[in-house]
Amino acid sequence: MKKKAVALISGGLDSILAAKVVMDQGFDIIGLYCTSAFSKSYGNEQETHAVKVSRALGIDLRIFDMGQEYIELVRRPAHGYGKNTNPCIDCKIFMLKKARAIMDELGSPFVVTGEVLGQRPMSQRRDTLQVIERDADMRGLIMRPLSAKLLPPTKAELAGQIDREKLLSISGRSRNVQLRLAERYGIRGYSAPAGGCLLTDKNFSAKLRDLFEDKVAIDPNDIRLLTVGRHFRIDTGVKIVVGRDNAENNVLLSLAPYGYHLFMPHDFSGPVALLSGTPTPGLKQAVGRLMITYSKQTPGRTRRIQFADEVFDPGDPLPISMAGMKRVGADS
Image 1: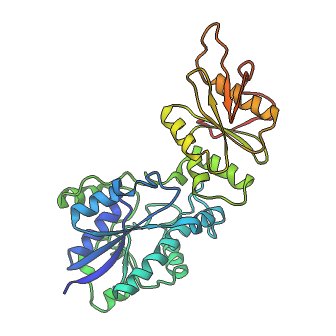
Image 2: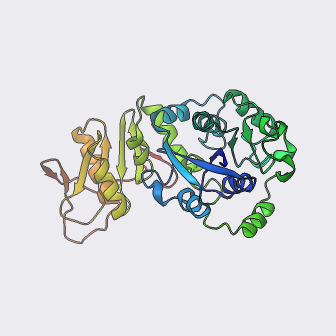
Image 3: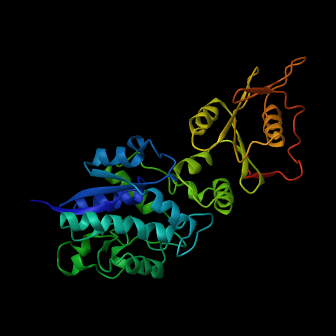
């Protein structure tokens, strides 16, 4: 009977290579792919690089939704953020705790990660790797095969359960060694580094900070809304989101039932908009004027807005520099 090991699989090259190195020592890998509302593929996990590459390598992959607990972690990470709103150290600790439960269930000797010493300035320094082990309560139980020879031996290495000499000594930000290994193993279809995490995106992070400042209770629908549209903050508790194309309009329509007020073009082709806050007459006019600002003008034709059972003429297009209105995120 083969030995089993749990591996965190992101779909990126490093996590796949780490799993493959351990597989080559006779272990069956049970992969864990952690998803959240901050994943670009959220709700469509079966189409991710993690699923496809795991399937190609014969890895049994479990998908775990980190849920509301992770949203609260992102709001207040104990170890702070990276460049944007990415809480990389706390994120790794969180995932390792979930992987530890599977490790104990299967009687595995360790959890495999694709971490490379010195590759990332926040979470993959030697000192932070030790912090992660400590705070995840996994001292000696995290196998980092790509950099193992540069790190203290794990309990499994000391016990002879895995051959340290067959592990690697990669460090730094260059990916040349990994790319050569991928070619040797025939591994393809992996994702770009950090390509699936919205928290590393500057524009998304600006919108998320604005949301955290404005709203106490946040759920995945609030997060999904941040991924589409032009966002305008008028006041505390009042935000307007205007669609940029048909695909975004459809997303806004799907999110409207979750606490937002829906505005639609009545007799012209244009964007859908959502309003959070009380739809006062002034706010309705502001929403409508934004909608016609971002739609094409038809000479001699008045563009009207549908709100609930009401149809109204919002007036002239709205100057985006209007006093009291703040655009959130540079891509707005």
